Image 1 (cartoon, helix red, strand yellow):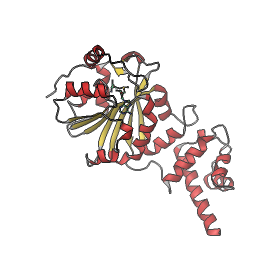
Image 2: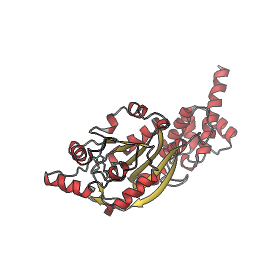
Image 3: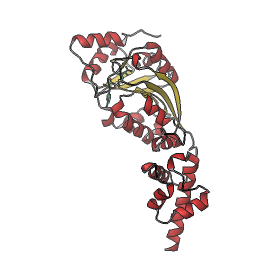
Image 4: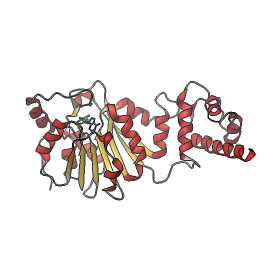
Length: 290
Ligand code: SAM
C-alpha cells in the first residue's frame, strides 16, 4: 500500500528553520514539482522487483515515490544535514537505506553485487558537478545496471543524444552510444526547482545494450580512436589516425572507404567501428612484417 510521505517542500522548510542554506557547489536545486517526480519514477520502470540506487536524494522529491514502488532503495547523499532530515522523515521504511556518503567514494561494484542479477535501476536528479564521473561509472558498471533515468543539465543531455555532424556531437556521444541506448524523454524548466538554477534540465533514459550495436575486434581501441578523432575536432581525420599509428591513414582509408579528409565529428558509430577494426588489422600486419 502506498504511503504519502512528507513533501520535499516541508522538509526544506524545516531545514531552513535550522539555518540550512542550499549549497551551489553541491548542485542543491531541489525538484519542486511532484508530477515531474512521478514521471521520472515511471520512466525508470520501477516495480516491486526492482532494486534502486538513487544518487543525491536531497529533500526526497524522488525518494518518496521510489520507496512506494521499489523492492529496495539505497539513497546516497553527501550532505549530512539532508541525510539526517531524510532519515528522520522516512526512517520507518526497512527497505530504504540512506547513506551519508560521497557517491564517488563508494565502491559501486560491492554495492551492486549485493543486488545480484540482473542488477539495479539508477535514478538521479544529478548535481552538475559530478555528472561526468557518474557517466564514467555508468559505463564501467553497465553489466549491473538495468537502466538509468537521470535528470541532467539540458546542454549535457543535448550532447549525449546528439547526431553526427552537429556541434553537440562529441566523443562522449559516440562512447555512450556504444554502451547504452540513449533516449531524451522531456525537458524540465528551471522554474521547477528551488532554488532556481540558471539553466533548464532534461530527463534521459539510458538502457545498456544487450549486445554491442557494432561489431569491434577491440572495444578499448574503439574508444581510443573515438577520443583521438575528437581531440582536434577542426582537423582532418588523417592527422589523428597518423598520430595513433604513423603511416596508417592510407591503409585505413583504402580498407574502410572512409575519406580521412573528413572531420571526426562527422563519423557515426559504424564508421568509428570500421576505422578501429582496420587499425587493428594494420597493426597486426605491421607486427607480422617485423
Ligand atoms: N533528488 C533531489 C531532487 O530531485 O530534488 C535533489 C537533487 S539535487 C540536484 C542533487 C543532490 O545531490 C543534492 O541533495 C546534493 O547534496 C547531492 N550530492 C551532490 N554531490 C553528491 C555526491 N558527490 N554524492 C552524493 N550526493 C551528492
